[in-house]
Image (cartoon, one colour):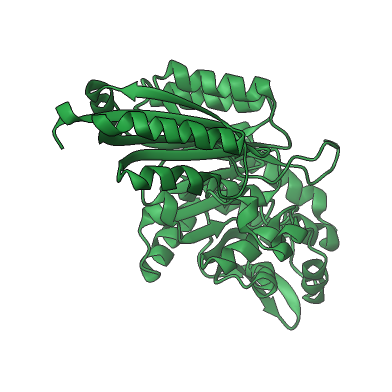
Length: 413
């Protein structure tokens, strides 16, 4: 159509939502054979906001607006019309080529202060918010409920003025205002994650298994002292691992089954595993802990891969030695890459979740690396972190809405 003979019109409809409203509006437009250039709709507590940008012949626009006004009156909604110039439309089309990002805010609850501070950071970076979506279910009025969670996802367009500065500001904000965030490029890899790798101790379970074993062996204080030395950087992970395992010599094998059957599972793990399996994700445990306990979780949750350390057992007793190569931070990253190759998954489609410094290599390598309930040093070196809710918070960083999940998975929450 020649631009001289056509007109661009944006209509905005607000009011009480009801079934058939959108159909009634678009049926009128269909009678005039208009071209829809853009359409969007949001519904907040049954209050509708519908926008449609269309192109029509100039001699039809008056008739269309008249019919739409009449129909809006019948439906009890408000309608407004805005003429759009060709220049305005071309500028809008030009913006579509800019980078798209997803900012996810997550916490037990989200306040205006938190949202306002986060969106101000986006604005200062020259980013524009295209859409806002709530991923969690209706927020209960009783904020003291333990399972309460709130998540809002912002679809953002543009290029940050300083990506590193923005990341640091969001990190500080999350610490100061007790919320979590994820800022991801909204590309095909984000929408097609396929492999997720977890640390085990203090991630899938709320304990360090080596401490449990040490307590049973009567060497708890010694083992914890070695752990502290490793954390102070006096010895590396591998040396500390050998020293701690040596102290377990003579412990009866039956103790491991006792500990396995009473492992404290982290909040949200059951729900997370159910959803990941339902949607076809491959799941791996990559742990500096012990394979006996990793395999227990594998059988419990249907996990696909377990790579952890193997304790040597002779005549039903731990020997104080281990078998094979130690699974340290470097090895975890190697295993992540190896499993991705076996599963024919691009590394950008992978996710890694862990709490310790020895998880940083795989967290940094994965397409989506998440630090979980961890120390500031680990959080500072990860792009995403979850500290306010359980492990099922990972689902929101993947874009899942509570409404996607069936009744069984909701009950698990």
